[in-house]
Image 1: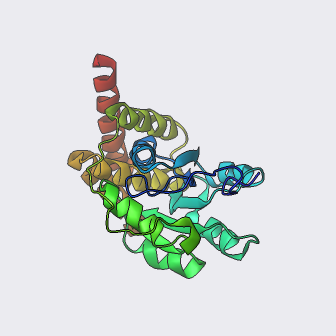
Image 2: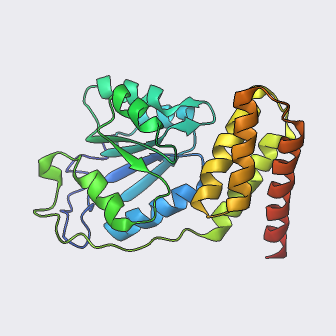
Image 3: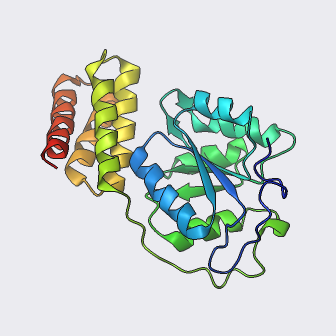
Length: 238
């Protein structure tokens, strides 16, 4: 099914809802980051679908073809650039394929894989989100002008952050092999930075640096796990 078909989405974009008629598939494992995008889509008139890993995204794309796809570069089952490369060669091509990450160095990898653009996280500005997508869409899918795009700071639901903490607590409860620790450090560094949780973001950064430097990770991994549990206890208090 083609979500971008004019038969599926006859509505035309307007200055206040410039993404009306677009269906955006978000490939993102963080519920907090995804909630920010959900709110931006709501304000922009776009429909949203979500996949939390590469496997889920590929299953989705076997059935539906969105008009826009946003792909996080660090996913639990692989690198987002792999999916970008697949989609850049696909026929028919999705209208706009964008990578996204809080790590600036991944932008080059996304563009090299064939992305049309890149979104720098954290995503908080509605105008940045809208214009980044609109500039990459085919001309016939854009509103007549872009100057009317309004800005607004988007604030995700704090409970989505707690959901992310529950997710990574489950990950850390399993075998702490190298891949698990690398994923946990990358995931927590990004989502904690998005939520302005500097204590957890700094601890996740130290874990990433320990892994990269080949130094013992037991103590810092335990510290990270303890911080995650503290945040889960805050959820129970709520």
